[in-house]
Length: 123
Image (cartoon, rainbow, N blue to C red; front, side, top):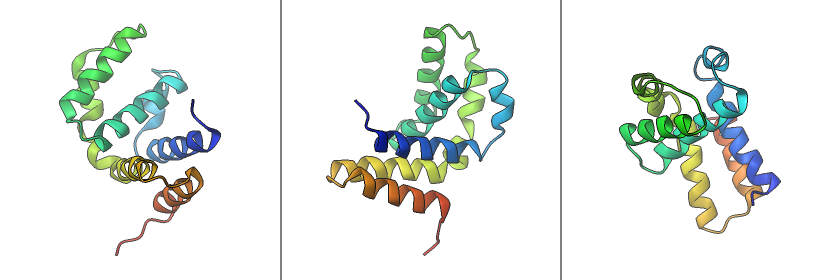
């Protein structure tokens, strides 16, 4: 079961990603919940080390499973540049996994993710 704070972490990551591509184009074709899940799946896939092809195949299978008929090529095109476009969000997801594994509190993680996505710094 996901806590409210954990939900806020993932919501922050997904909402940040929505600002980095033509969200409105896809929002006309998919309902908002499905689109949020699609974005999260892409981010978590890359953060977990999955390759482009694997993420694309898994997304296609999930969409077909919920009754959305879409060609492989379309999903592949959607995923194609997201490892670059969502690089900050992918890192935030990776950081979230790492901090959870290390036993950090969800509030600490939310703070780090918020700082990373809202005030990125180059060192």
